[in-house]
Image (tube, helix red, strand yellow):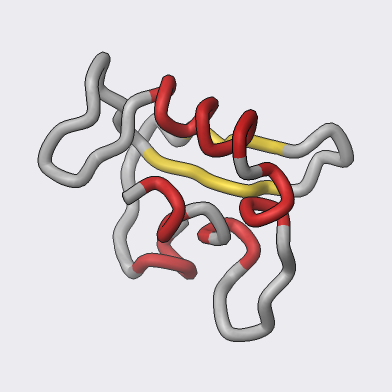
Length: 72
């Protein structure tokens, strides 16, 4: 996480595809989205509704942050 965002934290939660590829991570997920921090439900919704976009590989962004823009 620190390599991708410049920040650290504990504990870390990593959301993986069925192929064990990370598609999003974070240290805290509130019950409801607030202050730009997505909830577990919002991450799940992005995976469920926009899976192709979430898992799309882009050279300009780290793999573990692929879903970041989709969750906003």
